Every structure is written in C-alpha cells, then in structure tokens.
Amino acid sequence: MPIDLNPKDAQLASQQLHSLVEALSLILLGKEDAIKLAVCCLLARGHLLLEDQPGVGKTLLSQALAQSLGLQFRRVQFTSDLLPADILGASIYDREAGRFAFHPGPVFTQVLLADEINRTTPKTQSALLEAMEESSVTCDGVSHALPVPFFVIATQNPSHQIGTFMLPESQLDRFLMRLALGIPDRSAERMILRGADRREMLRAMKPVMAWTEFDALQQMARQIHVSGPLLDYVQNLLAASRGSLQGLSPRGGIALLAAAKAWALIAGRIMVLPEDVQAVAVAVMGHRISGGSSHAELLVEEVPIP
Image 1 (cartoon, rainbow, N blue to C red):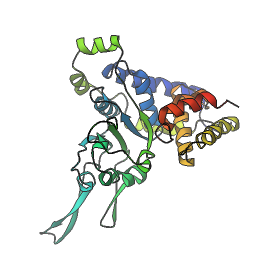
Image 2 (spheres, one colour; image 1 turned 45 degrees about the vertical axis):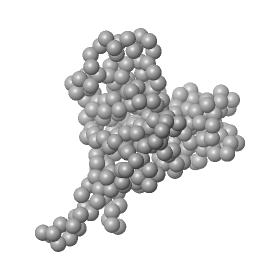
Image 3 (tube, rainbow, N blue to C red; image 1 turned 90 degrees about the vertical axis):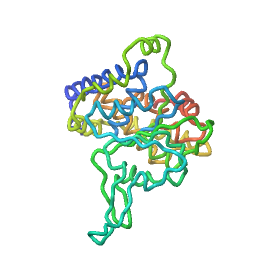
Image 4 (cartoon, rainbow, N blue to C red; image 1 turned 90 degrees about the horizontal axis):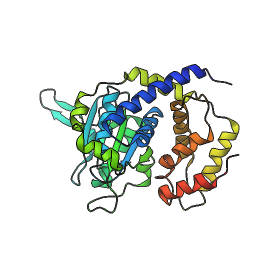
C-alpha cells in the first residue's frame, strides 16, 4: 500500500481528534455530530458555512474551534452597508512618508468569523473569494499573504428571513461544508438552561492541542489511502448528481474525497471506506447541487456501492 501512514499512527490521531471533539462538546451541548463534521472540515483544510436560525450556537462553535487550537480569532458582523475594504483593508496615504500604505483589515487573522454573511451585498460577499481560494488579498495591484493557517467560518440565517442576500454559487463552492446545528434535544436544552454560562466556559477554555499538532494531523489525513473501487463510487456519485440542473464539478469531487479522508482518520483508519464518503456527503454536496441537502441524501441512498 503506497502510504507512509500505519494503523498505530492512525489510532493515535483518532484519539487526539476525539479529545478535541469532546472538549468542544462540553461548550456546545447536544451537537456532537455537527462538531465532528466541523472538525473534519478543518482537518481537510476547508472553510465552513454554518446555516441556521439565530441563537443555536453558530458563533459559539466558531469561537470554540479557534480557541481549542490556540488560533487567532476575529469576527466581522456582516451588514447591508459593509464595504469590501472593511474586511480586506485599504491603502491610505501617509503624509509623512509621502506614499500610500496598506492597512490590513480583519481578514488578516487565522480564523475569521464572517457572521451573518448573507446580510451583506453580493459585492462585499465576493470580496472574500480571493482570500478563501488563494489565502491572499490584492490591493492596488499588490498581493498580501494571509496568515497561516487561514480559515473562514461563515454563518448565515435562513434565506427566507428579511434582509438576506443569497450567496452565489461561486461563493458557496468555496466552502468545503455547510452544516446546520438545529435546536438541541430536550435533555441537552435542559442542561443548557440549568448549567454554567457557555460564554464563561468559553473564556476559561484552554487549547486542546497546539496548531503544529493539528497541522501534523492534516498532513496525515492527506496520506489516507483511496482504492480504485472507492474512486469508482465517488465518480458514480458525481455522475448521478449531474442529472440535475446543477451537479457537482470536479472541484466538488475533490472536496468530497478530502472530507472523506479526514473522516476516515477521525475513525482511526488508514484507508477510506464507502461509509466515510456517506458520512460527509450531505455536508459537502448539499450546497453545491440543485435540490440541496435533500437531493444529496437521496443520492447517497440510491447510488450503489461497487
């Protein structure tokens, strides 16, 4: 098998990742499945879109993810009057120096929370495209590299709410996954109502692992083996999705495979199984195809495993 990863390494990595999920689950109760997918998204080096109604913990999860890995975190509240320069930065004339100097915007951070991203105009939404794809910002013809690592975690409210602008397909495709947190079940909600303040718990939260450790886990995820029959299965899913008006592009297929590799590592395996693809398929495919998550779920059910 042409990989350097061995089963023992994968098991140790799985233990580290489950410790991370458990720490986050203490902050956001009753959402372990969504937390596991969020960790999987970052492990696969992807940006994350959280879509749900206000008050279910989207911002809390974003901050907890950054804090658990000891990463620099900044939040931008997206509003209808927000301008691209408010995010990216701008060149301002320095009289003493006699030249324009670039002043970095809040995008120059390791984890950027784009809060309620669909409440701003498409022009401002698109300002993040280069940053998300190239990890750099261009101003006045000069490219400025963003910090390493760089993740965007965006939240958006349901599109039927007043004052929202739908994200275009090109913007949605930059997000590896789209997740919905939903309302916690009754027992979890009871614990939230009776327990400690989640914000206070977040402020007291210590990093679970250093970024260098997580970066090593990302490298391991890339080494997860993918067999020929598994690639056949992924291609069958891609082909089935293209029977609709908008199907998965090859880039969407790459995203699906990267997420499946990360999920396999979380499970402690050194190769991707069909259930790894199925576990991440709806989160990866739902915002990329016509019919959304319900169509993605149908594809997972209908496409046979070779």
